Image 1: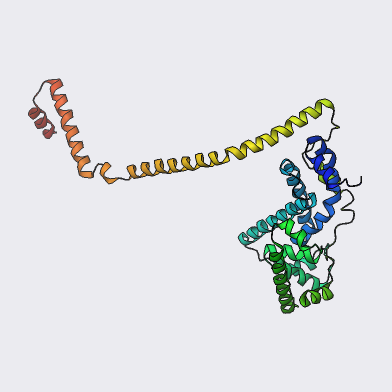
Image 2 (image 1 turned 135 degrees about the vertical axis):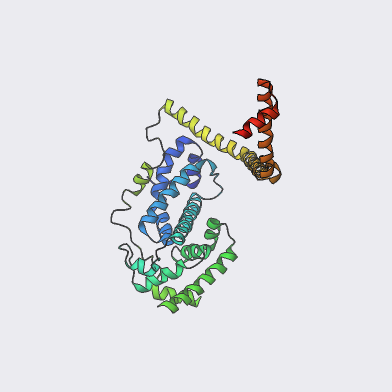
Length: 182
Length: 138
């Protein structure tokens, strides 16, 4: 089913019958882009799958609060990124309470059957993972998805100037990290 | 930006991840099957039920939002009252002035024994002195 116009989708989402009709179309349209954004943050396929499911669950539950002030894609991306970052925070707190040593991210990725890169790519992902949440998200959306700063600004609710600064700092940190760990 | 161009020229900007084969083929169906959605084709009756449930859930949500500050205030007051009650009970229990001392307790025992003798003496109508003398003899 071709994707209806944004205004038509918002109109359908405003009532329960329309929700049931259009939500499967939205899931079909946005599940892949959401998956890859989530995957860039959580790194593992299984975790990305879980977070993606949680994202659509949260979107479905919060449909009554969606007022159409932003695009549906922007709204979904925001939920997905928040869910992915919440997942990471929860994971970090579990690791801190665990007595087992956490293997390096690069080594973990190289051992992952769904990682499609070499050692350099693994170190790059490790460098990205060391960034604070906002820098990591901005870098991922700008570098891999090539989103404009105006689009990222709407997703994260941060000014374009702050995003540009975040991205610049992220690039510097990644460059230094990769140089040190290659 | 030179640093960005260096990273791009070295690593490219394709995500180095892959998904399991066929993962995306039924992804949307799998996601929809796990959502709390009524999969029946909506009839006129079902439509009205669904609408009521949808309205109830949205009105319940706004009610919860309206009463949340009151609920939070009530819980906070409850916690303060419970803490005050527990603390005052603990202080009462461990207040030395409320506990009888050993000397007081022995004095109370002696008084009790004497009262007992007096009652007994009254009952059997004999002198206390005679009774004490009798007990000393034992």
